[in-house]
Image (cartoon, rainbow, N blue to C red; front, side):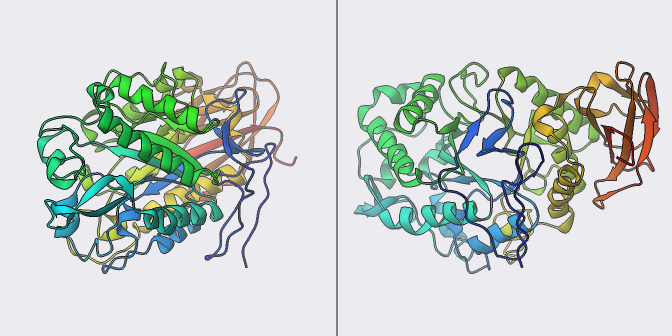
Length: 480
């Protein structure tokens, strides 16, 4: 039997309105759409619920769909929902990788694109060329719409990435934009960037891009669980701005992120509704210091007064580390930094997470990664943590071994997280009265016994051991 939980803003839920047990779920209210409450601008709101987004993604699910290696898009969504994830990032269609998709035929055994094929001549993959002025309507009705509908039924927010990076010569030659792969005479040559500001002067190219975005918006307009991301790691500042504003004009009220940019576009001051960041310097997470450095940069992004989505970080896929504990640490770093997290290791549901073509059967991520979301969700729910009212307040705590990550509503509730145990001093000098504290083990998903602590001074706490721990401190006595 499904466990249905209706949560309003005076209580908390990590997912939208639903705990899913097995594959049974509750349909979302059609009128409920994602929005941002100016009173709590760092979190999305749907109806009367604030959302803390925690995700894990394979961005090519619409291209994979059902593969000979055992990938199944519905089981993928079931895995997410059953383990407390409520956020995925998904390419609206594949723009690059034509040769690779054909090379790994068992993995991509049912590839499909948003555009119609059948033009004269063959593309680089040996298949008919694309006509970018014609849509494959079946792709939209049989893949994009069902995916969004089933994600919505499971309480999952989908960030749709509209364009992807193909700036390099190799990526461009393998993309739908290359002259060899389409019949549309776009005036592009190897080395050209179809998302540079110069694209705004290429009327044939721009009209194709605009028609594609308009069709995605029209097709997905019925769903309330969608964020539109203009581009992944590509785009000139004016080109990105053009499409942020284009989406806002075509779909008033739609939430738009510009995407992680390699241009001068500034998401802090630009017209995008959300800020996104990726894995940071070099893309590597190998030490707790890397986690702390990332969190510090995420907190700086909050200057924009917008939700901050950490929508891409890897483990095996960029050979950072093979330690799934880093996923848990990143989730907690993002949560206590007042942001949202999406783990993206593009081969987990297609193999072991190491390489695209390793040949292993489809499987979900290791239990340590799945538990990372489930247990964070449990902490927020069982602790009744009003995260939308809280803010990063690292200055309120200090530690001998490591600086704690602190999220707090001063005077009411404090959460701090330690990547490596140790002692912590929490400053309650300005907050008189009695507080109840509980240690939480994020590795096992369990609260310890509550104990009381008096405010009015600095208080010292020592983690149970040298692993990572969180402490929840809330106003009121333990018996209340």
